[in-house]
Image (cartoon, rainbow, N blue to C red; front, top):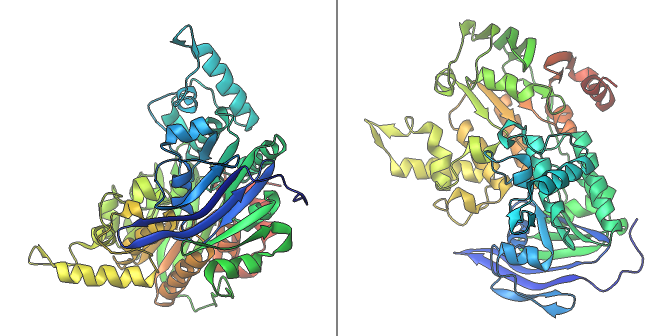
Length: 499
């Protein structure tokens, strides 16, 4: 519950502005953080949230505006200076080092020392304590490369907690976490609040926002457009403030007649990942695949795309048995895959937006072996507009876009290949409500044209709202295949959790 009387703000930002070339990322951002309070920062992707975080952590310097800490003006010169001032951040994407151990990752910026030498015993002990606090039973001496994506994210959380900071920024902290891990992290946020720390909580998940936050601020187009006590607003009001308009039906999918079978999977198995998987997929269908982290969803669809190979079973595509040995073969078979990890598997961040958009369609855009620059620009502009990618120019490096806009570029890249089967793995992870609606609408239009879609998502409302059928997985096996008439949140969750 929000406090009725707050102490003076610990950190205040007033009129913060920042531009990149012709793009004004922040126009006039204002924000206050109070000790012993959690402030939620919400806004669409491209609203300026990520830029603000980088200013607070010393990565960027503002062009205008003031930052005060304890009532005194400050300039945050670098990330190390931010840590010295008592600001730490838990990022949306886990920033970790695979070749180091868990303990070394947690204390990578400040290793404990004794008599001038690294105190390895203390480092392992402190790491174990922090991991236990997060409900994670990973060994501090384990190589990080052996951990799952979710476990790596927990390690990053432990790193932020190790600094004992007065101000903790949580930037989409639960995006890669299971429900259990997310709940544990939200409890940690509340504990940090009780300890008197100021928390900036950035999330697109409104249930989490209303669960933990006291106050809120809404960013739109680089401006702070609204703020106040969270108890005085509603989800609908926040959404309207974020997008500048009322968002209606979030999942406007209507039943359409399904066509012929496109894909059939028979008793597919891969050791230690999934076993005895069988289903079919038809033209015009969205088949949802739901399960908790570790259920084997991503591992299954990666085998369909040739990233890995099944040990047993059969894949039948367009009435012919296929066995793609690598993604190039899958692409030739008109299978496309939008991966969950956009930064490492889905895109080349140093390439321009246009280059990323057209990367999988170069042969189609070429004539007699020559790539048509004009045609490339036209097609890239068309798809960037269709998915409402916010950018100053298609020549910008993809790394300069927000996470949500990067995801839309990856999705558009594969849609350009005109596949017959499109596999999307967490396609709207970390994307705001307005961007989600754009992605959903594209998927709906495509299945209306006969495309067959496999939708892997941990967003249960998304799965229920878009899918014609839902395949529920648990521990690598199918535990339910439900028609749309059977789709209820409670029944799907019960199957996924064995509750």
